[in-house]
Length: 298
Image (cartoon, rainbow, N blue to C red; front, side, top):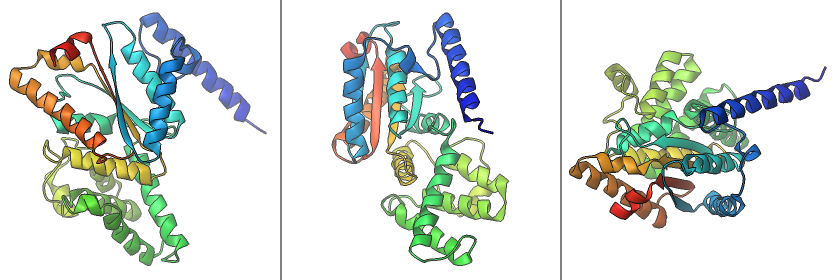
């Protein structure tokens, strides 16, 4: 008995109800924006071409300027939907007191917490699993072990280091955490595997004992957060996605910060732009939104 069609109908009905409820409340629906979007053909074309460039190994960005209530959040949500349809992982982050642009670690935390793919929300674990599976499949194809073979496990652990060579030269912690996750997963030690994912996501509640067991030195902080983001993008692309599209919404929140925090926020923004334009963030796309007051003041 084929249940695909009823399942598809149920998903369509659920999506329709979500759209109706969101429009009633004046919020942005989680999915199905292509069904209600009107008059953005030109803008969607620009976003699509930028994403195609990023998928080929470039890095790019777009600033969205508009008054409160002008539809900026709807537009970036639609842009992320386009990205998802093109095979990107996505993350939608709102600048706020808990995620200020002045603190790269907080920004990285929010990106990890809001990662989404076509298969899953909160998708960091799914992405890491897909990446490790791709590594194993590549090694099996090269005749370096079979499924469940200790030779394959050893080769995979070595490949983790090789795949992140550029990152590991500057900071070995990400590769160490991934090795710990891989070993724990294979051993059925799911609490340790979950702790490894939590540490990679810079979650604050991962205990010191995990770091000792994993042989990790240091942590994700404001100094290393961009390095971890670069590693995350490499993992995303290696897992078979075309890249990572990130929306940073409500930049105008920065204006309410103290002067030194505002300056650090602008430095973070400049660092992202320089990295994208300098070719140091391949397969990465940023969307930023702000009110005219933000752009006029900065």
